[in-house]
Amino acid sequence: MGLVSDARKAGALLRKAAASRSAVRSVRRTLAQRPPHPAHHYRIAVYFADGAVNMYQIRQWYKPLADLARRWPVVVLSRSATGAQAMLAEDAPPIAFVPTVRDLEHFVSEQDIRVVFYVNQNTRNFQMFRYGRRWHVFINHGESDKMYMTTNQFKAYDYALIAGRAARERLARVLWDYDLDARTMQIGRPQADHYGGALPYDRDDRTVVLYAPTWEGDRPSAHYGSIRTHGEAMVAALLATGRHRVIYRPHPRSGVVDAAYGAANRRIIQALAAANAEDPRAQHVYDDGADLGWQLVAADVAVVDISAMVYDRLAAGKPLLVTRPVDERASVDTHGYLSDCEWLDADDAGRIAREVDRVRADPAATTRLAAWVSHYFGDTSPGAPTAAFQDAVEELMDAWDQWHERAEARGEPEPPEDEADLDETTGI
Image (cartoon, rainbow, N blue to C red; front, side):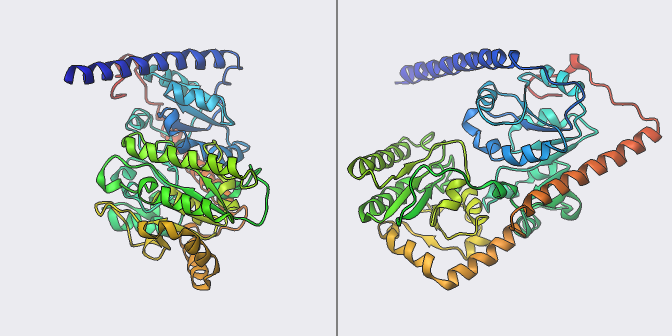
């Protein structure tokens, strides 16, 4: 059995390596057909070291960055071929493919990058931290009360752009000796200004329910996924009513750790297809598209797991239910919204229609929701988050100017970067 397992692992590694080489060739061909990047043009870089599987982390920033680029030119520094390949096929900002540290060094030396954004905590972020005299800013890929949101890694960045008071309180509880006033800026949820888009179904009198579960997690404390515990029973119950439309948007990593979780995911997709075949007017949606936004505002009620999707929906200010993890080892922060949210227990998944009706009609639930929206995101009026984001960047640029002027006044030269000493593993 050991030899068989080793052979499978070796085969998987070979396939992965072949796919990576193919992606590299594809990216280089595509970029060769495009004009070269203008020298000394970009002021802001988004550093993204992940592949296609984690595209959701950067994809949600495309539209806010496009707005920002009207004032400050933006480029994505893509370290992974599959990530670059995916972005080149989408409506992403300009892409610089820099797979090696030498590639990264060469590109940075030809630009005037003053602010570097990071959307996740990839260990290869460390390879970008070596470049001083610019701001390294964590912008994250969502707002949530998961333990990820209070990692001590926040201290690695010069600044962090956070959503609102809830994020500030969360960091204050956990991080020691961290100057929140100096190192955080509150910007709300600028992505919410871009929610919307064409619907893949015809509007009618059906109640639309968005079910957007997260993946199964890779450790007990992160066992938030509900597809096996809640999802199948819940979707079956909604399909049976004839008065609901389901939008099913599972996490793209669903099933990567637990094959049974992936199988349950596939059964839900098959159930939606079967329901549509039986009644084409139902127009249930299996949503694996790149765009996130229209789902959040189109759904009358959303059912989500403990994940950033809770807060993406919260920013829309519309009713939601949060699935309660079955695994008691799952870490649940009950200091914030999760202390007062509308929980959906696994035992109630089959009675989801009743729960949907309840959260839509309960005035107390509506009042609580509005209070939490303000607590997490501040001013959510149209355009306000975008203005806050751009104001924060303007403040960073002004601070960069001040530091640069002081360095010039002191006659300080730019620090040299010795390419020959770069280590591709550590980046130092």
